[in-house]
Image (cartoon, rainbow, N blue to C red; front, top):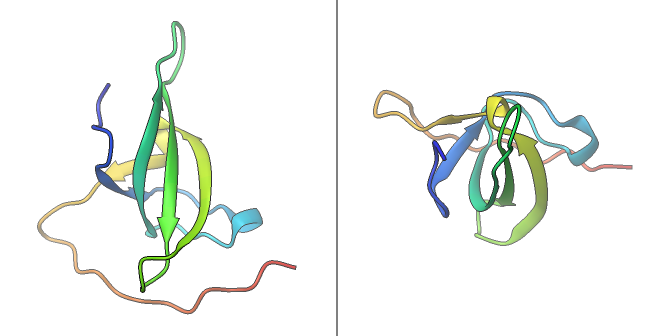
Length: 81
């Protein structure tokens, strides 16, 4: 497992069906080891007030670690219709 449970990570892909964009921050809440292929992770995504927006499951290649040379920002959440 490359990432730890409850580690904050960055989405490396857009997930338009969930209103999420590359660069959004999420928290790992579950790890799914794969015998072959990529491990998977369930991510909990929060709004700026700490309220849960959604939980998504993605492949390990869809996330990256936060780094010290990144600055956090806020963006409006696009409503899903």
